[in-house]
Figure 1 (cartoon, one colour):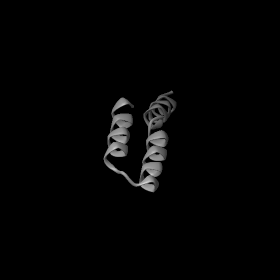
Figure 2: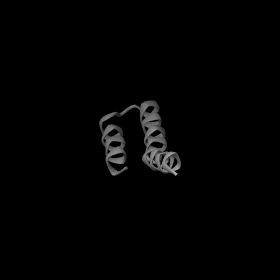
Figure 3: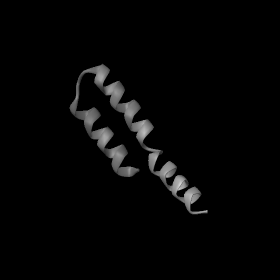
Figure 4: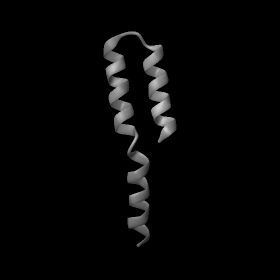
Length: 47
């Protein structure tokens, strides 16, 4: 999760235009909880 947040932060710092920065922020926010959903799905499949 930390790696995804850091990648989003690095991309936001490199891009100056506001529209791509907004989409990068949204993508970073949406991608951060994905590993938790994968873990919950794996636990559901094994039980």
